[in-house]
Length: 190
Image 1 (cartoon, rainbow, N blue to C red):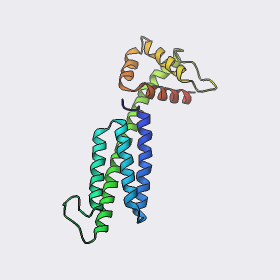
Image 2: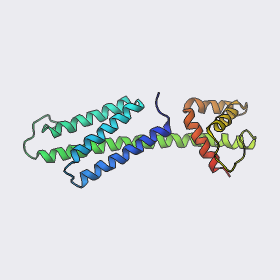
Image 3: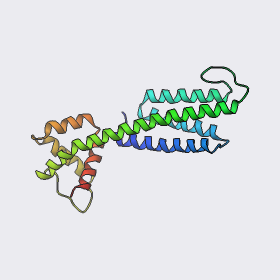
């Protein structure tokens, strides 16, 4: 089972930090940049494998294969052995690999943020309705617990007025994401 959206976003943000560190090592002309690039690509492929993103894992492994080929003195695009300016070719491929993987991560992070923002927009009127109809208790001094959030969501799903919309959201999102967004909306409610 794939992790819920909030968890995937958190993992992507950690990977983006690792990507940034690898880019910094490349920019600083760090002599150990090759090891940093390989470590980042290994981390990225492990994260993609863990969340079940086979296509992304495959892409990262292909990027790693290109870089390993360059480190071995073979240009990954022409498959020719490089004897002159080998270090420059390796750094060039490192930059190419880092930028391609970072671009994918940024795109996926943006997509997840957009999905979560859309879910929040869908839940906002449901929460407002629940507060108005006393299906959700008014704000208290403390954040609601997970069982309380689950009961609130169940009450909203059972209300005949909003049941179709609530169920549609329940089918589209992981329950953990719904509860996190619900908790966030309740904490920001007046």
